[in-house]
Structures are given as C-alpha cells and as structure tokens.
Amino acid sequence: MSGAFLSDIQTLRKRAREHIAQGAVTPGYRADRATVLKLLNEALATEIVCVLRYKRHYFMAKGIHAEGVAAEFLEHAGDEQQHADQIAERITQLGGEPDFSPDGLASRSHAEYVEGESLEEMIKEDLVAERIAIDSYREIVNYLADADPTTRRLMEEILAKEEEHADDLANLIEGIAK
Ligand SMILES: [Fe+2]
Ligand SMILES: [Fe+2]
Image: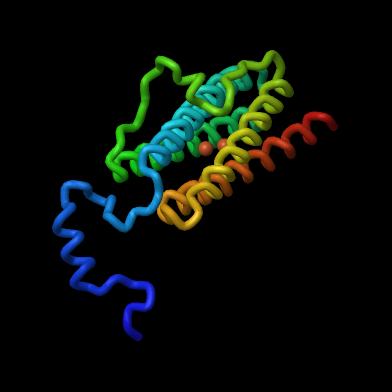
C-alpha cells in the first residue's frame, strides 16, 4: 500500500538529517513542546513532593510501630521516585530541562506536602495527594491525545500506578477503621 498516512521514506530520511540536533524531537512532533515541558515539570514536582511526603510518613509510621503501613509508604516512595526519573528523562528527550529546584517546588506540584498527625491522617493525606495526581495526569493524557503518543503512554503508565496507590491506601484506611 502506498503512503496513505506515512510520509515517504526519502522525506522521512531527509527530515531526520536536517534536524539532528533536535534529538528525539522531529518535525512530525505535533504537540506544543513548551506546554508539554511545562506540564511535565509540574508532574515532576508532584512526584518529588510525593517522594518527600511518603518518606516522612515512612519514618514517622515506623516510630508508631505500624510496620505494615510503613512498608507500604516506603514502597510508594520508591515508585514516585521512579516516576520522577522517568518524567525527567522524557523532559530531556524533548530538549527541555528537568526542574529539580527546591525553590517553588511545592507550588509547582499539584499534590501537597502534608505531614499528618496520626497514622490515619497520613494515609488520608496520601490518598488525597494520589487522587489529585490521578486527576491531573488524566488531564495531561487527554491533552496530549495523539500529538505526543510517547509522553502520553508514559503518563498513562504512571496514572495506572497512581490508581493502584490510591487503592492500596483506601484498603489501609479500611484496615485501620476495623
Ligand atoms: Fe507517582
Ligand atoms: Fe502515587
């Protein structure tokens, strides 16, 4: 079948050579790169704030002898760190710079850093943060649609993980209520 939707190979090759310095970003990239980079840096801040909050909760929960819950917090902290790294990686692939600056980190983040007094409060705050991440990542996925499938797929994977986290936390709350 002739190229009903694919550009012909010669054109693809020529374009690839012309824009080598742009790395993974080809002229066929249809998203607004500045907006995508801004959204990704907000997602990066969100993940970093989640790592910090889960770490705080992990060490505090250990202090109140809630080993099972503490282990869950630690696992989530590790997942959020992985998300932060994946997002930072994608930012550089798109020719941007990952913003790791502590200045303004909390205001770039969608989710909040709340310490929480009791174990139950910690879990609830984590659940709120996950639900915020779920909503904002879903919006990012919808915004990207077909304009940047790679970033969209990454955010879809992360979104699925945040939904798992929210579910884990809801189960923990139920367990504590009993
Ligand atoms: Fe995450
Ligand atoms: Fe999460």
